Amino acid sequence: MDVPAGIRRVAVLGATGSIGTSALDVVARHPQRLRATVLAAGSRVEALLALCRTHRPLHAVIGDEALYPALRDGLRDAGLDTRAHAGDAALEALVAGPDCDIVVAAIVGAAGLPSTLAAARAGKRLLLANKESLVLAGELLVEAARAAGAMVVPIDSEHNAIFQCLHGRCLEGPGAGDGGVARIVLTASGGPFRGRARHSLAGVTPAQAVAHPKWSMGPKISVDSATLMNKGLEVIEAHHLFGLPGERIGVLVHPQSLVHSLVEFIDGSTIAQLGLPDMRTALAVGLGWPERIASGVGGLDLLAHGRLDFEAPDLDAFPCLRLAYAALAAGGTAPAVLNAANEIAVSSFLQGRIAFLSIPALVADCLDALPAQPAASLDALLAADAAARALATARIASDRYA
Ligand code: NAD
Ligand code: MG
Image: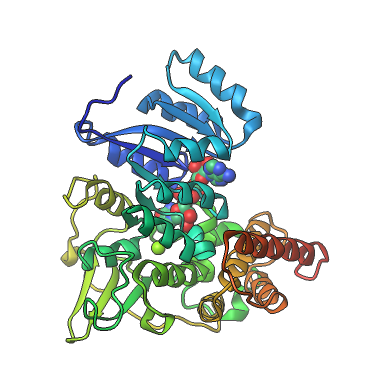
């Protein structure tokens, strides 16, 4: 099953998820240019096997090592010569190895950090959807990518928009006087609870929180969009990708989700990127860059949409955004604590164990209890991540956030 020369070989990590599925959709549209050679998922073996039957990759990796026999036997029974692997170490080796040129990092949460780092260190083109790895270890990840010459294309609609507005400049840090960027403005849909007062959010359910009005996404990021933590994580993500301090990264609520973000230059120009809310556009930008390739997404008919609205975010109803700006300003281990506490809080909310408003309360509590320390090494960041997870888990078990 050799891949012909000239075809770019793509590893899709988180292949069974929302971004992974969209990435494979775009790859399959370009058989003369792209081929999925590595597919990785966490625990959904049957879904991974179905993808292997369609895309016939060289390698399939299941995160949960106990599921290795099911993957191996399923591939054999399907008559595929795709090789089965399991666990983080196998995934890191494949991502760094010779069977992929492009890595779509679309595992959800801090679990995506090791493989994302491995791709950056190996100098692969990194299509980075896993924003949590940038929030947790942004300096280290950016440094690793720079040192290895890895091109990073953000796969977050806002950051991909800015990447396009800056003609592919990323990780260079536009900075003052360099590129003429005054500030960037991330747009936010506002999520399903836009316009609601804080007190009215006390009883909202997981089903209501994941029902995003504009984007179809995995459950964790959907809850993050409902709390506006997603935008907070994106502010930190933008800081690392584009080298700007928090004061020069603005947030504007734009309920139609057609303007994906804006860059304001020192001469008064503002350049924005627009398009339908479908992540295949961002993925096609990353897969084809510097060329434009078809994504399956139609053009934008502004007459049909009629209007574009903008409003300021409500930080009283959605304090997670304020917490993220504060964590960015505090620096060191603070963003790692913010991210880890949020992952535990969101998971508990989705399980019906804590209320919606307990998510920001728990994150604030963890940030207070674990003040920012210098974050000189990956070990220091992983220790902060572990401490925040342990603290958040203990606080939830104490029924303080029931
Ligand atoms: P999802 O829940 O739909 O998919 C997550 C994927 O990660 C699944 O394939 C799952 O099997 C895999 N996974 C989970 N834990 C794993 C582990 N330990 N090892 C290996 N694989 C594991 O999530 P999603 O919405 O596709 O989001 C993925 C990432 O992309 C997140 O970081 C999210 O913030 C980011 N993102 C998503 C969107 C979107 O539109 N969905 C937009 C911007 C950014
Ligand atoms: Mg986004």
